[in-house]
Length: 152
Image 1: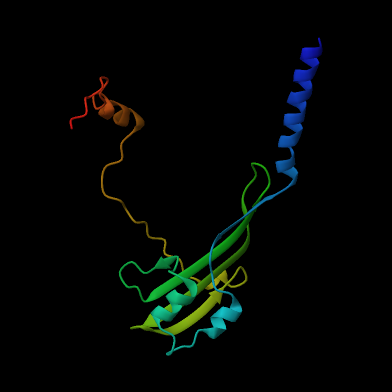
Image 2 (image 1 turned 45 degrees about the vertical axis):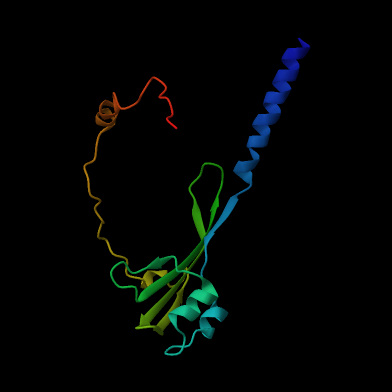
């Protein structure tokens, strides 16, 4: 009887400790974006790409075909238990270059994020999508069951 009581007490303690993640949010931060003061230090037609990289590191995103646009992105999220993740803070620094020097700088946050025009295009990947059955059947016979000797 005592063993049963101890097991129930431990189980209850573990269950209650798991409940703390429901009441306490998990806050995560990702990425890096220069702050307002840092953005003010970037001088149009004077600051170069090299200056930007030395000061802030490589950007989060560069243009694929034209690297004249650089984006530094940071965001902070909050999530309770298994609930939906909510964005607390979002900062995006957009830097446009004309050749090697800065021609435009703007900082976006949650208040003016709707000014950014996002593309609705989808980048297709090459190859064929396989179903789970096709993947399993395709792997049959590909694995060796016997050990192979290592040659010197």
